[in-house]
Length: 329
Image (cartoon, rainbow, N blue to C red):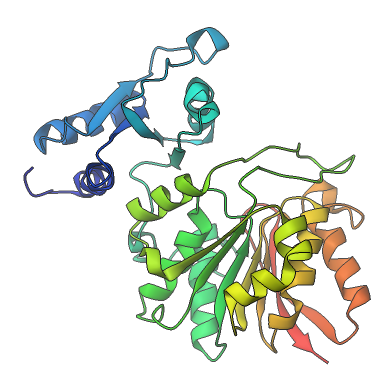
């Protein structure tokens, strides 16, 4: 292998290092210029022994065209230029996912999986992107809100990675943990009228760890709490709290999509909330902003049951996402 000369090559080296350390190979699925760029990087770096590239430019996403699983691959990386490409590639990789092989999708190329996304001003008063919100959240917390970052609904780790790099860019990640709660079975508990389906956004703990690795997030900075929320946050609540140990929440990111798991997350995190905790909801304004559905309904129910707390609107961001400041009354 030779020294990488650009970000794509650096990313390929991370991917190759992950697989080489496990004595396995990675299948990289991409289209058009992305596939060509990655293939060239793999060739230039002499990584063919651990990285194979599948160009799916001319393959229609259909059950007849699902890629035949090759046992040589222990992980699949989808390098997608947009969400529609990611979904099409994901359907072609269904055999791998069904076999329990981590299938990790990176959307946008080159992928913004490290602190580069914060080098430019990614946030403003009127137009907050997801990375921009986490950039702003880190700035806010550094101003005096101590504690860890707790995320409920991590999937493949994109927002967790945003949070880590936003703090790390300012050398403020050392004393904070990034705690990921996920069932890895996808959404559970969807009610009628909520615009999701149970099982959507399923992943594996291994896919999260792989995604964090290639994003440059140290393994020792992330604590993964795996399992159904009904179990990990309710039935085995004491066991989970013992695992976490003493903590306070600087940021709580609720990315549960629907009401039931969002309410379980809020109930569990209540003892860790402090004056000024930043509470973020990724799908707050979905479902037509109906207060009876989704994360809105979960927050309203939680506030009714916890009169010692109030929340103050902080920032709206992305599509339908909102953040709040927690007040202890």
